[in-house]
Image (tube, rainbow, N blue to C red; front, top):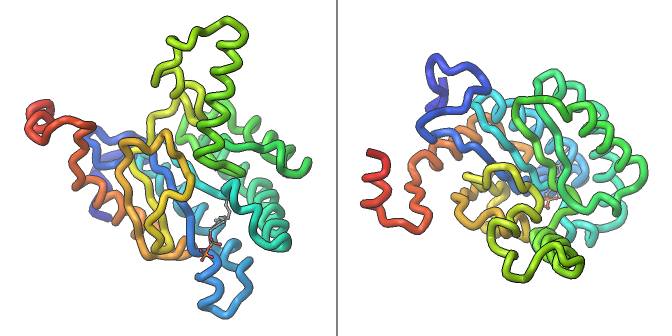
Length: 258
Ligand code: FPP
């Protein structure tokens, strides 16, 4: 048994003592390098990345994670060579087609966050179909951030609130952190507890800028296609040793734990 699994804990049961993060957000980096090291086309790295997605989704659900958010395609990824972008789009369509039934049978609810209007019609339809199929599921929520950017998210929230002010349904003074949090993507979900970035870079790269304010950050050299249950458990062990103070002192935190 791994260090973070708890005896007697049924798969999918949230843990009581905070060792398992409620919400995990992952930047899946290193697919290209994984392939290049094998003298293989970059696309094979993305294909291998889908296997790591499958294993991570399954492992998170078994460990009782409530929300898993994966950064699949950033607003900036359109700058890649057209051929790689096209191959990635096809990979998303086929991964959704192949995996949505498995997600559904595991009671996982899928939601895609990001500006999906930029995707081709086929991909948009596939996303809508997978979301509809899994909409009533009550297990882990899987959020796939696709054509997502943290700055875009903040701007779309600001625009939405500005429109409400223009319509007279809000005053500028009504715009506070609570209302802003309701307007960004992922509203209604617990904020990420743990951010993981694979592939050795130590950047957030315009991922969930608003939502990561108090998130524990964890970086690993492991390339995404090599990320497996053992690597996930290592991240959870690191997370369980962090003291989350949310602006308070260490003494205050110790006393609040009783
Ligand atoms: C970053 O690696 C990875 C991506 C831009 C794509 C991620 C996509 C997947 C893992 C496939 C499917 C995902 C889902 C949710 C079905 P990189 O190409 O930047 O790697 P590099 O830094 O080594 O070049």
